[in-house]
Amino acid sequence: MTPDSPAAVRVENDGYWEHYLAAENPPYEIRGKYLFFSEDRERLVRIAIEELTNGGFHLAKTHLPGRNLNAEYVLCLYYSDDSRKHELAAKYKTQPGLKYRYWKSDAATHAGSYSEEFLDQLPSSLQRRFQKKTSP
Image 1 (cartoon, rainbow, N blue to C red):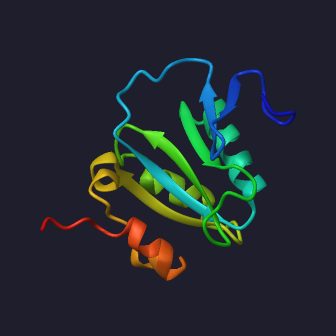
Image 2: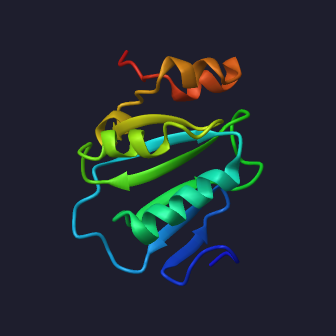
């Protein structure tokens, strides 16, 4: 737990990501995530804790301080489907310095599908790591 997280949210890290876990396991299968980007990591942490405490979400993660690949940090807010994309857009659209990118399925992540905007912000040496793999 971090000093700012309520007892209902457990915080763990693996040396790269900080994971936020609700006290209860999700009653759904996680199949993807809603993505938020900001240079303000603490804002993303507050969103994760708010959504796990009061928003019906059960799992989230963001980079540990200094582990972001560019100026922005990413928050992955995990869920079963994209059914809450408009709700989250309406809730967070007025927050300056916060970019909300809707839903990304686990299948898209495993296939190496990343937005051009994300790739364009990376140094070219890192872009290759995130581009789709092609078969020979």
